[in-house]
Structure formats: C-alpha cells, structure tokens
Length: 309
Picture: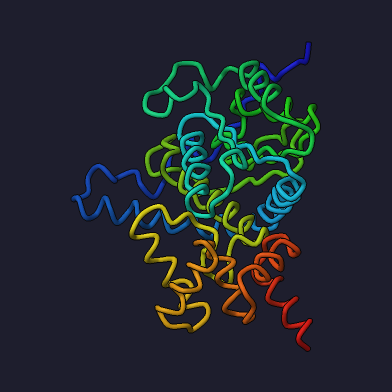
C-alpha cells in the first residue's frame, strides 16, 4: 500500500502571524477598516507577479496535457477547494471546453462547498485515494493550500505523481518545504492577513488571481480566443447570442447583417464564421482550415494568408 504524508513538519506560515499594520483595526471607523483591508489587498498583485515564471511552467504542463487528450485536476480544501471548483465551473460556458477537461476535487466532497466538514482537510489517505482513482498518466494536477501543508492536498499530489501525472502546488507559505511529488511549486508570499489566520482574505485573493491567470493563459495557448476576444463560448442565452454577434463584428469589421448571415452559414459556430469572414472562404472551407490548425483561429487565418501569398 502506498504511503501518504499523514503528518507534516509544522512550519509557521506568514498567513498565521499577526499583522503589525492592522493591530488597531478594531478601533477604526467603518471607512477606516475598509481602507486598511484595501491597502493590504493591494499587496497581492505584486506578490503574484513574483511567481509568474512558476505559473508559466504550470500553464505549459496543462497545455501539454490537454493537447494530448488528458485532463487538468484541481485539488483543495476549504477556501482553496471552493475557489478551485469555481474556476473549473466557469471555464465550461466561457470557453466551451468539454466538461471533463478541468476536474475539481474538494476535501469533504460537494457538501463541504457550503458547510465545513470536520477533519476533511487532514485526510491525506482520502486525498490519495480520490486522485489515485481519478488520475491517468499524462494528466496535470494542481493543488492549492494556503499553509503549504494541507494533508488532503499533499496526499493527492503524491498519489497523482506516482500515477504518472505532472503536478503543481499553489502555496501561500514560502517557508514550507517543497512537498514530495511536486513538479512546480508556486509559493506566493502575501504576508500576514488582516485578521491573523483568515486565509480567505489575501491568500485566497492570491489563489483566485493565480487560478484565473493560469486557466486563461491555458485557454489562450489552446486557441480558445482570437486576439482578446472569446470565440469558443456557448451562446446559451440572449445575452450571449448578442455577444457572439458583437465579437464577430469587432473582429472582422463586418456589419451586423453580414455577421448574422455568416453565423447562419456556419450553423452558429463562431470560429467558423470568423474564419469565413476574415479569409473570404465558404463555411465548409473555413471549418476544414480550423480542423487542420487544431481549432486555432489565428493559425487558420495565418495559413490562409500564406496560401494566398
């Protein structure tokens, strides 16, 4: 039976320390309290900026996995797990990715999303068992933990590594040792929280910022955008159908009627309509060009220009 890290060496995280800048926060008026919180929150982007190379490495692992037909898994507990579930859920309607491309694993399961489940985050064997059953060789698994030592997450990452997956860890504790089985460590230092130990604050904000950047960059690299426009979204309501026409118009300069006609010819496929208008080819040829270029609109357009030259 595989050994899992049931115990970890305690290394005090910056998030658990008292913040010398907020010791008098309970004496302030409401606006003063909010000003102090806001001042601390402004430290987060700079801290995230310090770990961009590590985030880039994680993106490259994810892109490689998805291009090869594998999946990306998020693993977390508490706030970290809830943020992971949120990011995975939002990618489906935003970029029209398959439901199983991004899979979130939250300690304690679905019930823990709304109510804390006692001891779930301490269950290293539970994390290991869940990922052992879910992960395949070639997948990429990204764990999240403010403390850098959550047993459920570390157990899951070690098990995933032993199954042949690449792994990464977003940690809010740069003092913690690099866990076994982790290929890329993203240790972001947001310092002491406004309220000591309340890691749903700056640590959580940093995790949300990193996850959003990670998944967005992955989508861009996979051709789910054209320029800075979403071209793979699901137009499931009137608002999104209107956005589809607006995106097509902004990308091509075509009139509303021309865009509507192009979408109709493309059977509602925004990418096909986009290549059809940008390259001046029929929808069937546009679809074939996209297929030949891995669904990348930019690559399909460049290939069209090369053929015309």
